[in-house]
Length: 330
Ligand SMILES: Nc1ncnc2c1ncn2[C@@H]1O[C@H](COP(=O)(O)OP(=O)(O)OP(=O)(O)O)[C@@H](O)[C@H]1O
Image (cartoon, rainbow, N blue to C red):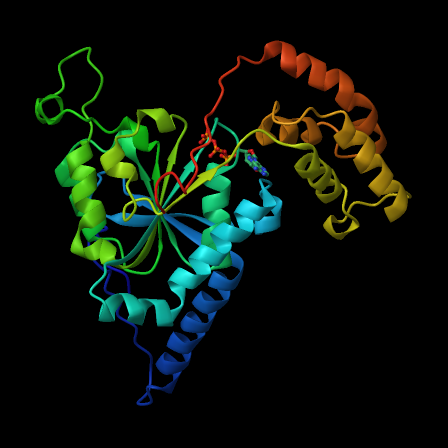
């Protein structure tokens, strides 16, 4: 029996009863629920967001695991990122941190133009490591107290995704004033954010991923090692990645039925990729192109040139300066 007055705060209490003296049916039922929940984590990532009152976390979506190979960016960087997370989550690392009195936490910054895979990569990481994902959209967090409450309620082992991190106020005096009519909504502050990142709760094995389209707007206090340990640039697509994306889109494993054999598909992929200029087109735009040509790899390969010319004519240039992790001492 579920409590109809449940307000989403804390855990919900359920009363399960059955006829007869034996507790076995209830035990079997609980085991079935547990097994089901474990199977779900093998195939799905549970995404939590704040409920509409901003009072508690609630499951917002259950997304099928996105494989890391479906997020295209620099392969070496991808391997380095995975190795770093794997090492961090290793129980030996946790013991080493604890015995040396170091806070057991890891922060990553994913930055780059819109539509280059920052959210997709965060989801793929949660799936790869079997973790739930807690989503915090910084522009919609009104005050530092709200942010603090959110962090207090997040469990230790999970991915915390802080999106659009550049939206924090750097000036505390502005944020502490109530929002005036006609003015933008107030927001949490940089010092509020630093507090929760350094807080006790965040030292228990969370992975904090921050995303931004404006890395240059971030305060150096936020990006210092210990808060952000690794910076990952997700940029426009290169030839190699566009080739991989082509092969993925027309892969026979995905149920694509075609008379094209694998050798021919490889050739088409090479021809397709040759027409994509390096670092000019976002992966999301290219994905949009594929969505119109999923029926035919021939059409995709023959029409891509014209589409690229149109895209280049539309785009406004914003160059991203790649921040090396070395620069940051991480
Ligand atoms: N690097 C990539 N590899 C594969 N698909 C990508 C990549 N980047 C973007 N996409 C596709 O484009 C869409 C938007 O991607 P996503 O939301 O992850 O981008 P984002 O960088 O987080 O964007 P924003 O900065 O606007 O939030 C998704 O459907 C995703 O599948």
